[in-house]
Image 1: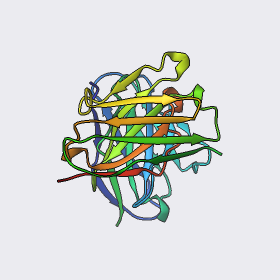
Image 2: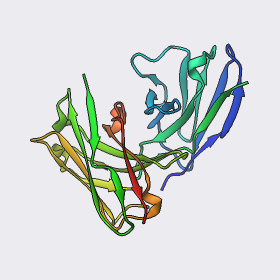
Image 3: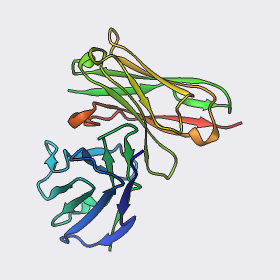
Length: 107
Length: 120
């Protein structure tokens, strides 16, 4: 099974900051990587698919990059509504696997 | 508009069975694979399993933690995907979500989830 190691597990930042979250796959997954945002008490929402493709309706301050085994989610100009937990998901091979999550908190 | 609505959750004793349903609308259900994802209280997301579209044989795949206990099926005539959960354990306590799609479509839409609590 492919293991997804997400880092950091938690971080704090201020409105207007730029933050980067990383996911590393235990083996190559080409670009079969998606990113999700989950606000407290809400259903997860897909932000990025294909490692770098922005989901329709998601603000352009979100971006994804990477291929193979290392991937990043970058959020520019953090907004108050961006403080949430973020997860990566590999869907290259079964079983699909999520990263452990990154909780982004307000500094 | 795409809608996914889960149902069938509740309180169940360890060792018992439960079947969840996810009713889809707003898209051609038969053309899509469907996932189940769960989230234990205060924990992260865990992928549970996937069923391919009928055109691709309706093949199923599972996480190791549920393989041989859980089974996913679908009824395209009703636009419903099921999760049959047998030999339930306390560790299966979670909110269960159904999500649409595999490949690049993976989990583009989510249901609201249904809570399964396994306790004596």
